[in-house]
Image (tube, rainbow, N blue to C red; front, side, top):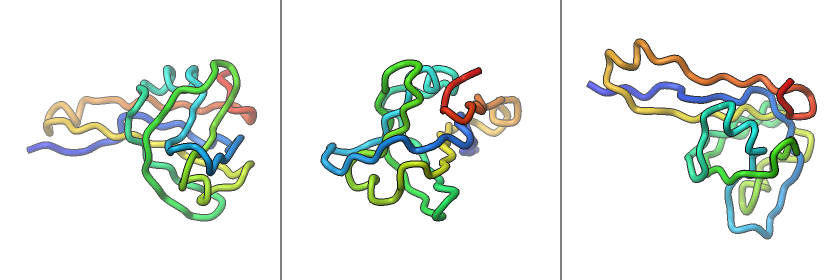
Length: 115
C-alpha cells in the first residue's frame, strides 16, 4: 500500500505579488524552496488563510533573500498582496516508509525570510 503524506510546508508567508499576465505558477524565494526541500516545477497546494481559497499550481524559483511569494496567471485572482498563505507539497511513500518520514517544515519571519 502507498500513502500520500506532507513532504514540505512553508507556513504563513505573505503574498508579495500577483501577476495576471504571467503564464502561471507561484514564484517562491529560492532560499525558502531550499529550506523546505521544494524543487522547481513541483506541484504545490496553496492555502489562503485570509479568504479560504485552496488551489494547486507549480513552483518557479524567485530571487534569493527577496522574500518573494508571487502568484502568477489565473492563480493571481485568488489572492491579494499581503494575504497569508500556507504552501504544502506531498510525497507518495509505501506505508512503512511513510511512518518514518519527517517533512521539511519552514516558518519564515514576517518578511518571508529565514532567521
